[in-house]
Length: 424
View: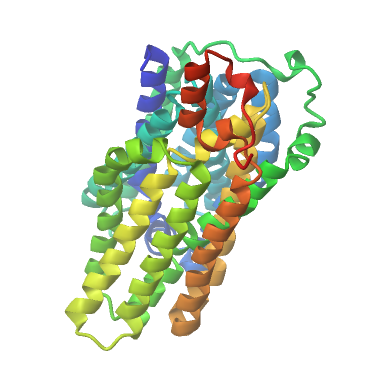
């Protein structure tokens, strides 16, 4: 790991640590501490998603034309301003504008940092680099949330102002850290033959493998991440009688599984076809939904229901640990020369769309229609397996199984450019 990659990983950890300070307490802060009510608090959460959906299509083109570092620095300053103003805002209009700035900055950070990781890694090291990124993000969110929970006081607005000020300080500290990063000079769109910023989206939509990956990514994020704090938690409380403390334990089990399993599964995942790894995640998540079904619809004791519910979150964490060294490197390998920023932004856009729609659909289902909710998302998980296997037919061997492609090249003494389709 070079100096540039180390700074990028420090940046990921700092940004996640800052977000962990505030995100779990945002609803309480707006609705109760500022006294703006549940409707405004709900609008704030919606503004985060809308801001991301607005800026991400432009972020990809900016990264391609200007490079990821200037875009990242602008996003960090925007997020810092949004966080600090959110901590000081007392009116609904000020809160919504601040949330828009914070949401936009936070959304653009993701593809910018991902593109920097691509620029600073090789095909051989990329899976490990993204696994480390995911590990540090979860660790930062967990530690930030834990410390933030001990600092907040719902009877004191100043305690929340302190939280948002710390978050803003983390973003500004990250500006200083990232300004020192010297990444290898990656080709910009003007230097890549046949590429143009205007035609970037058209070219991306013409890439069948990337389009299929985006569809698959939408289902992945909709059926897992989009349910964590909405449909699944509502289902657990209403159908399984899970207490709020047990719900917190389930979320902790998810993070713990990621932290413990991330590097244990990495070597296994690296040597398998990426499409089959994703397909296996779909099966694991199908089991998770079946276990959740037992927790809420079975007739066991409350202790068994609670244990099953916690196990559901842990199984989701295992799948996440398998996806982190798989999805992002695959997006990078599908991107033509100089277009990694565009492809990363497109995939981030799909993720944000799924995270916006997932809670809106899953929340009401999980709270009231318990059996249909479980059946529907169990089928979504099996759909992930089907979509992943279909995607595998569109990938070359170098894209689907880089380790095997490298081994073949070394044994023949040839060049990786001659990779053949995976199903040939």
